[in-house]
Image (cartoon, rainbow over all chains, first blue to last red; front, side, top):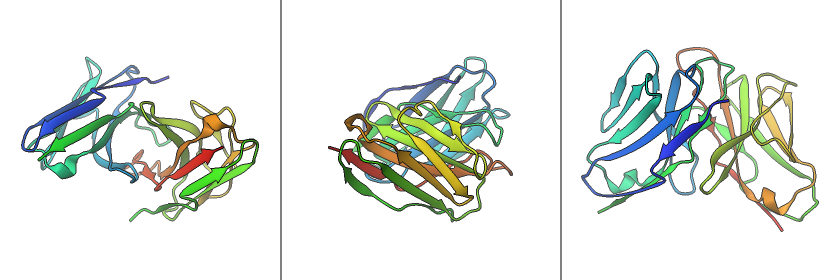
Length: 113
Length: 115
């Protein structure tokens, strides 16, 4: 089955800095890669996703890049703000409606003012 | 807006008790999931269901069972709760169709403590 590795497990940055979280996956058939943000005490929520027909996707201050050859994808957050502090999970699956997501172990991002 | 509702947010149960965690979604989604979340271990899939009365084992099904009698409702059952099942349980749903296929929506979570 799929295996997703996520690094780092914790990340501390100063407000305004950039943050990068990296994930690798094992199943070359995977082609859907979402990122979820979980604030303290709340549910994980989808913030951005990428499908294997594109290499990069941006949404305001967040972007995701995908390298299918190397089987890794990354989340980039620019101009970080304290409200970006949360746990971020990457995930991977085949883009079939009957596939399940395999999650990484999560990255706790702390943005200090 | 998709709504996935878990009826119990916080539960304390005794070892050996039978525990039911209920989940309801209001978006007519075919797929429903139960995950367990533990610090440092991420989100691990316990069971999932593609349709009414159908169920599939996830990565950590031992000690759990599920029931899906209606499309909108997916229940997680701990037949005999043990202390190592103390955790946060997240229900989720998704639709296999459309551009947003595979996007899963989570409930708020149920914190279970087994003493």
